[in-house]
Image (spheres, one colour):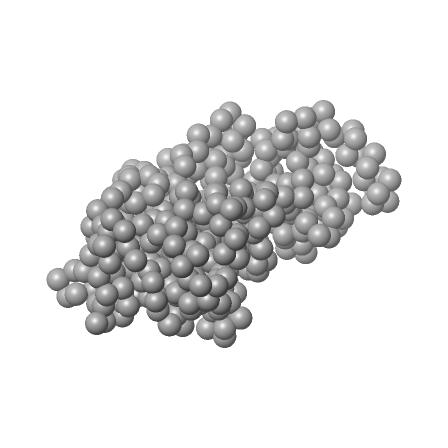
Length: 422
């Protein structure tokens, strides 16, 4: 029988054991009432345990909780930044596409799964709400599933639903789900977006990462027609383009007529857009990031950002000054697929500078390479686009210097001659 928890003080005793790994739905989908309760009751577990929070947006986790908790995540974004700076966050550096097989094999252990769910429909099906992704694999492996059933969580269409008998314990709440921080693109991001938008043809299927640049690109696509979406995440920009008639999914080579996504990260607008909307289909990571699926997507435009790119096309998307701020994530899964897709566009977009420093650098050290030069595609800054596909190292250097900030080009040329022998 499903245990009913008090929403004012949910008692998790007996549900989590010493040595367990607790994983929960991330970002907007975080079951905040449960994660806060777990943090407050951590000592009562009776021994150390591990949590895997993914992208953390709430205030549930803090460095001082390392007295009982071992923190593991695939990223250092959001509230995880404080854990990383305190030296208590251990990073799992792997491609997003690897999470489901790692969970199923036990390499990524999931003992307890905590979810935010929408209330059941007339058929008794609880919706996973704002995220499917690697949760689909975790549902099949977890010993215990604890749910926050939030009557303000959107009910969404997807490959997996749950029923009452699947849940060991439930806390019933009514609160707005977390919203991802709004990012406001500036003039530099808008200039980058203009270059990218000029590359995207009508009928393309889009994937996009997180941050100001993808949002700026979406804002520049108002004149396009029949765009589609197959992406790990969607947000407000997608809702706007659907409402404007730009995203129709009519010309997708797979899943025509529908948006395919793993999760939503946005504001209440994005949450309202997906609520009971059959045009948005949530799928697990096996489908959103799987190489066999992506191989069938034509005109696939993968739009991702980076911390820095070197003159040979190597990409760093994870580290700034030795601090882990990003993730391996799905960028390489999508960039490789876009390289192989007929009419595909593997795009990495970034500002040419960060303060006084160039983000186009002579060489990235091996320890910080997220995407190797062999997978380099199109690099875009506010100064233009450099298509590196099929180019030699010497040709790449020339193209990359041309899109660097003018004030840094001479220095980059000197470093290229000295360090690369070009």
